[in-house]
Amino acid sequence: MVVIPAIDLLDGKVVRLAQGKRDAVTVYSTDPVDVAARWTAHGATWLHVVDLNGAFDGTYTNLPLAQRVIESCDVQVELSGGIRTKEALSRALGIGASRVVLGTKACEDPAFVQAAADRYGHRIAVAIDAQAGRVVSRGWVSSTPLTPSALARSVAMLGVETIICTDVSRDGMLQGPNLSLLNEVLAVGPRQLIASGGISSLADLQALQPLEPRGLIGVIIGKALYEGTIDLKEAFRTVGGSSQ
Image 1 (spheres, rainbow, N blue to C red):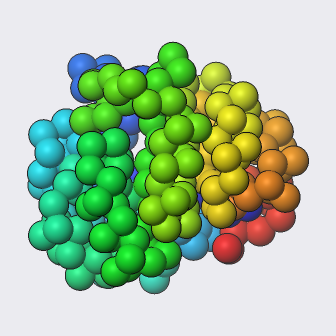
Image 2: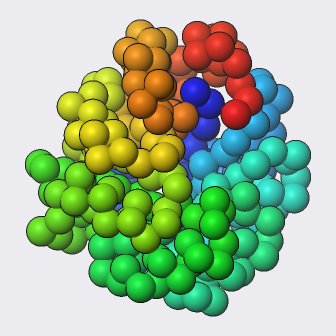
């Protein structure tokens, strides 16, 4: 299981939101490249870079910043947030992203996801963002009738190998992972699952480890790193290494 630090970008700054709410923002840095360098210096081999402006507004506006992060750090980077057109997807991959995460398009346009998976293979992942048993989209502000397991089953049939599963109600709240949600999605049988939302301690990482044989390959950590409740080096030691 690989530990993946999150770098969430809003108006060019590194921030964390509470439960994905745009008005519940904490700014941690005005220099995303410096933050990326800090996490890679501590051993990170993956970074999860989110354009929150793009997630809310539908256009990946922080792409130049994401490119600077990719060019400055010799690690793999996955990009997420507002990637909803073929052009945006091509540009994200063109600047060197190792993986691009589709969220809203996975809920609204299965044909788009299938075409992306057919063309780019393992470089495409899908975000399943859940709240109260339903998938949410468009920056987590729009509810859908989809259940997490139904969307997981659908995108797996479309050829998507990697799913990133987030409990929105726990994101940025340091309340621990939603193991029930993760088990629900894993029961569908995705090839690879990355857990996100609520990770607050080394004990939370240990609680996730029994899910590895079923396909859990990684965990995204955000606020816990920025607030210092988890030391990144200790996190790597807890899960048994930093690389995937």
